Amino acid sequence: MSGHSKWHNIQKTKGAADAKRSAAFTKIAREIIVAVKEGGSGDPANNSRLATVVAKAKAVNMPNDNIKRTIDKALGAGNTDNFEAVTYEGYGPGGVAVIVDALTDNRQRTAPEVRHAFDKCNGNLGAQGCVSWSFDRKGVIIMDNSEGELDEDTVMMDALEAGAADFNADGDALEVTTDPDAFNDVVKALEEKGYVFVSAEIEMVPQNYIVLSDEGDLKNMQKLIDMLEDSDDVQNVWHNWESND
Image (tube, rainbow, N blue to C red; front, side, top):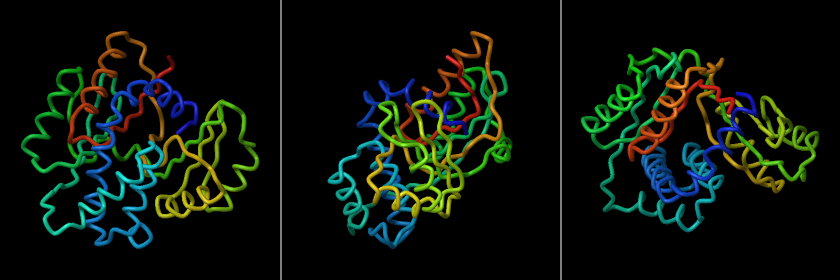
C-alpha cells in the first residue's frame, strides 16, 4: 500500500471520522471484548490480539479510561456479549475488490445488511475467497509528518531496528509496514521512542489498485464504503480503489 494512498484516505475522511468518533470507539470496544475473551487475558502483554487492538485504539485517541473500562467489562462474570468474526467479500462498481470484516451477535441481521449495501451501489457480494487472494495481511503504521518534525532517515532506522519489514515516506505521511507477527513488537518499540501514530493496525493491503473514471462508479463506490462503515456490525472495509481526488 502506498503511503500516498493511505494518507489520502485518512485526510479525506478525517472530518467524517471526527464526527463519528463515538461510533468508532464503540466498534473498537467490541474488538477489545472479543480479544479479551478469545485471548483469555486482560493484559496486552500476555494477549497479543488485545495488544493489537489497544494499539489501534490509541492511534485514534481512544482514552485510556475507556480502554481499561472495556477490558474490565470483558473480564466481568456478568458480561454476556457474544460476538463472532465474519468476513464478507465481493466487488464494488468497476470491479473494485472489497473485503468487509464484521463482528456480530446475529448473522441473520448482518449478512442481509451487507448484501443490501453491495446491491444498492451496483456491486455484488461474492463467495468466501473471491477477492482476498489479491490482498496481503500486513501491519501498517502511519505517522503524520506534515509539520516536518520527523527525520525520515531516523524513523526508517528506528522502524527497521524494531523489526519492521519496510518503510515508505510519501509527502506528509511516513508509513511503516510489518509482518503481522512482528506488529506488536514494532508498535511497542516505536511508542517507547516517543512516536505518535495516525493509525496502527493489521490491514488487508491490496496487491494492486483500481482507478475509477466513471462518475457513477465513483459516487457508488464512496456510497458503498459509507453504507458499510455506518453499520454497527462492520469493523473494517478493505478495498483496492485508488482515489486520485
